[in-house]
Image 1: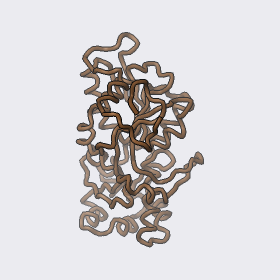
Image 2: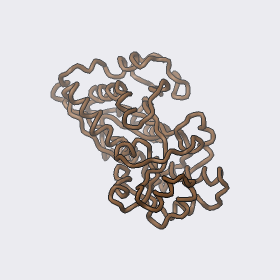
Image 3: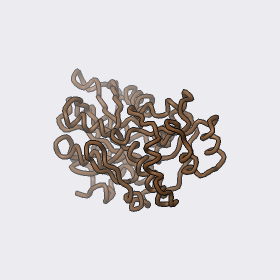
Image 4: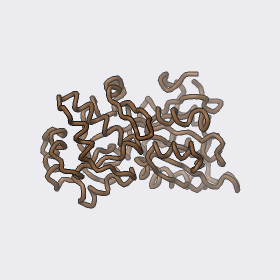
Length: 311
């Protein structure tokens, strides 16, 4: 069975027909299937809570219950059994597979990509300089302690992708010590969905963020070159030159920012979980509207996917 590296040749329609059971006609699944619990990467909190979840409820009559954490925290909760979601959604395909296979999952579907850039407050000194076209790494090098926010690298992929970004920029532009200095000065936000709240409140000047998060919060977003924005799979080898070791000892390497999802093995409401995943796959336009990347390369399957998905 081919994995994510060998793209599935199944059409989106064939995949939906197999994953979901499928046909999202109105009506619930019965007393044991009247809700679905989703534990997801925090960067998808707005698109899932405000858009995909309500659409799923309206189409199926199944209540959506979402909880949003850094993906490192998500997989740890599942491993430890402190959370028992029906659906698990992660922001790093390798992390979910490394940590949840084979005890908690044996298949997943990669469904969207993202890119990393700099969200900023235009009225601040740093924001004005970014808006004026100064090199972002020169602007960030002048940031005072706490002016720049990043997600905690020990809690979620966006955080360690900030570390990867700083390392790649250091090499690309000959900035000796840039990575360590930036990490030292940056405020580390422990709750990923709240990363941009400081910018909105005027307490932070800028943040290393995903593009969709800037769209969700309507804040300016400086796009970065493909060489280190983690948005272009053609640069995967270049991304992989950067690394970061979390406080748990998990060694991360740079990779394209891709989301994947699975129905947890032993889920209480596995059928509802499959139906939710099918709804997620059926709405690529909605995901694109919220700043995510969904093209012909998605969805991609990996592992022992439900019977009927053509490979």
